[in-house]
Length: 278
Image (cartoon, rainbow, N blue to C red; front, top):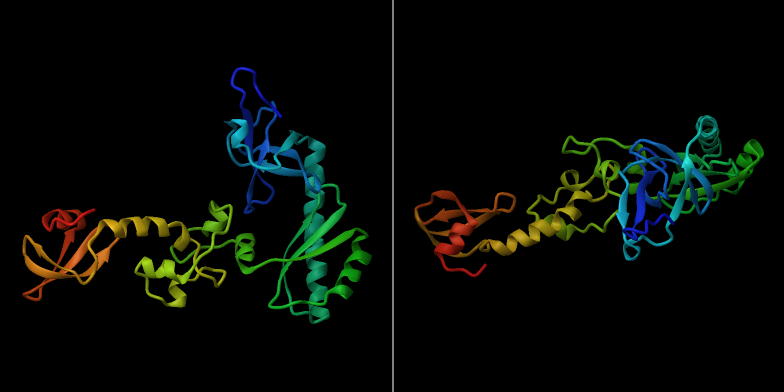
């Protein structure tokens, strides 16, 4: 590992192997790298080419991720040629496999194809609702490409990350733009955020609950603790009333006054006026 005597810290870099893929950490050694550089790295499947996605950062040994592997070198011209050849092979393999799936009427959907850098294996990613007997399909692929073949079933969230797209918020999908790992998402998270439990409103492109429900959940829970609960009767500067709604993002509450008027007030102001404990 790269380690300077002055600091005793390791140079770490983030690398992606697909434009929309997960980001992995590698030991940058003493190689000078910047975002966007193409590099050859050592992986469990042998050498691979990837793109630097973060600036170099220094970590102490106790901060290092498990099974940290090294950057071998910056990509050379011949490496880029190999990458282009593999891209052509992946496109051809996708077209061929997709055609065979239709011909054999297999209940599966081909999503992506990945060729290892040394062309020793071609991996086909697919989705399916149940187990698929693809033994004959594998024979077709081996005969066509004369290489080791792996068919790997993925779930719909991974499919959405690979295919990409826009969310209902109008922005690029979170799993594509910045999420490296999929966190568990539950309907309770939607309830805590006062969302309408309409599947069309709380489901992402993958058809599952939106990932953003998980990473915003903690903020909503913390904010709820700072506000008086719905249903409480309180005294405001405009009169006595009952709390009917909370706006957790703005940290305000809506109070239905005794005269039938609704007013929106600062949650902190109400807590102080009514001597609630934060």
